[in-house]
Length: 276
Image (cartoon, rainbow, N blue to C red; front, side):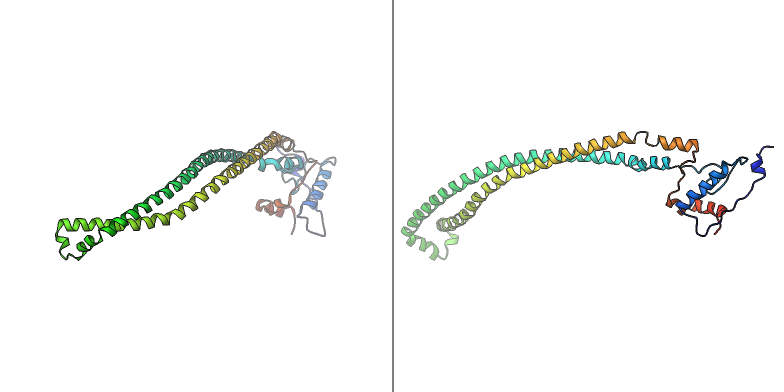
């Protein structure tokens, strides 16, 4: 009394084919046959692989599957928004870099000016030291007989006065070494003085390039942000149509995608409705 006549007295219909029906195209034919039988007068329930419970399988309507195509994009929306936020942070970091490069450029200009001034002063100092060396050389030539005595005296080390005067003459000999060292530095300083203006000239172009890169990045951010907002607006209620068809159990647009036939649960169901 609790079951319908169709449930208590079922009839079996066998459909024979000359090829394997386990594919999306042939399942459309099977579902069409099942719907035609269901619409026959006196038939209250039809069970087939496309409707094992007597009603269409959930999520098998074409509108539902079309609605679900945007699901992945909706799931990735938060990730894309985070990536866009990181792009904006990168633009802010580039602005910080540009500011630092502008400060570095100003410092480099000052360094070039200081280097140029220092080279000029070192050249003057070299001339002064050379003149000092010549004067000391004249002094050394005049007192050379006395100097030789300090070097000939075998006990000069033990005589404080002798050793002190000998040390003075040794110091005078160091003037030549110092003069030669400064003269060796001058070419390097002149080279540095020539390189610093070249570095100063490079800085503005580097800063301009960084500014252009930041402008391009901000433009790309705004463009992608606008596209992303439009896509997000298009995805609102994108699944409503599919959910409506699913809830209504509408069988006018049945379709099973090929990947369904790889599902283990569905394979077990096919064993009950399809022969090998």
